[in-house]
Length: 290
Image (cartoon, one colour):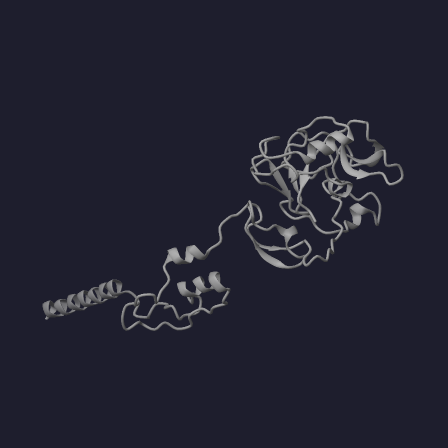
């Protein structure tokens, strides 16, 4: 009797062990998450292709239906086709914020401005330029510039080094010679001539520019580089320019009060004043602009 009972107990134990092993091998009997479950819905390659191609919004799959047969010719986009519709970096011809109407969104293609951007420029010949911030952030008294910091915010990054001897100011869209001291000290007439005849191959340029593309900046253009929160030089932090002199630079703007004088901008503290055109100051070329 005891032997029979023992065999029964052993049989029960073995049965339980086999049942447990079966559960471990089989895993959970509950079905796993499928494409139609919340949190696992997705777009198709065709929808991604259409978004890049036409801007179509598309919608995620809400239910998965097993196909009855394999995809036919032309019924599905490949990754190569999708990649073929994706934009590529174009730092040479891609628009920057200053090229696009103020407040309008666009996809930036240039290095440093890749992705969704907001324009800061004008459109349709109607110039509606906002006054940019001065760069001063230190408060010295209630209601002063450092306290209020009024003006159009500077883009980030402020400048783009184009890798060809030029630098684009992403605030104004102006293109500056990277070398801020290619010509040395010159009187006003010589400064005008040097700037107007500058071309690719000189001053580290490899941009394909020709004589007449470059010019001497006017007083407002040169002053637009000034950061009134910095001195010696009074330029934005992290600027990519070389050869910058903390001294005076000529502008192309003559004095209306006394034409033998012209306006100059000082990079020491950002001062602006007039002086005799026979004096010698530094020269910094620019191109582009309205």
